Length: 581
Image (cartoon, rainbow, N blue to C red):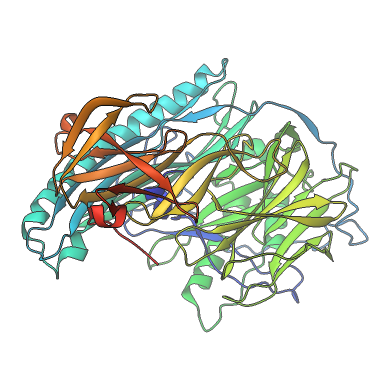
């Protein structure tokens, strides 16, 4: 996701946006898709087993989409998304209902780390390895079968990733003996992760993908696995359960996302086109299709059949207007509060006023890269949406809408050079959008608006981000912090000897103390803002010898926190940390 621990933000971005311009002059716009570029081939997974780094990676949903034939059929341009008069906004749509329940999912991730100094360097350079694994459970009663699925997935990923971590630690120990200034960067950082991105989790559907990633000394690989379940029975939902007329749906996809003309033989665009054609042909021919689903879209994943570096593209298709080929019972029922995802063009199709007609919200950058000029349209009409602060953003990263107790809110995440993106918030108000404000980066698809994670930059023990647990309910759309503990994972080493007091579980000082010698590798766990304490753990090869300790934190003017000891700030108390402008 998600995805919500600081050290994992870069790994969560393995499914990043591929830049494509909009071509308004065409019958329908050229596609913008998401892609994953894999650095090592990996093996497919089945529905409950993770992939290992071997050969020939494909996106998985108990599938192996390999059909590469070209389609000879042409879509009827007046069939999908329009009436016979060609008006996309006056379609008769099924009535929406809001009788589902959002599942209460908890994530208790497993986190490990180890570090050693590079012996042959003159300055304090640390070799580091991070391990992170999402572990999800369903809190609600009556979903034992679905909990069994999560439990089996975790057991399988743990058996794979735990072994990779032990291998990585041993590689780090050996590399630390000989790493010098020239070779340090080749061995300085290793990480292993299992990350969930949940698109839906309600009493009808649980849909998500998992990316497992291993970046180790001498090897590098990841895999993508996709899962769709009936929440009550935990039976797999297949593509044919959702799409009952493949030919008509293939026509809709081919009309909606037109191939892009490669600019100067751009290989990335050519790969997108190849993936799109392969996907459409696979839909027509009855091949297994890798997909997940949100409340209003089907997101399909397809590897480009190229001889170069394997790349997986995702294609997001709105479905509310496709009742002639899609079983809309999967989409027209929602929980009380819910999230809508944008399609390939930053458009959101939905019946916002529930009058039985299709509505479309469009977000576009009318400027250029690094020169943002936002336009928000409702049903084809540009809206007044007030002034906004973009903090020097270069592009639109992500768009979503959330329905809460006070209506629909539009969240536009802007791509920043800073480690943490900025998100603009707007309230849909009678066909216009009122600017609410801005916040940090939303860490995952907010399928449950009552529990979302927001990232804010932090430079404590190195540049990264704090992850805040927030709610969007009862807040006027602005994510409001609900947990006093801010998670952050950062590795460094102590620069001086420190004797620190021990605090009890309530944050009250005790008479005990702990001595942390200079040169001790440590990991920041997070900051408890109610207790004004930062929590750390020492890092030993034998994890049973790790020792947790606390330091008093101080709030800085720009919403970050710092620690002080003997008159020194965190920047001088720790070495081997990574900082960015």
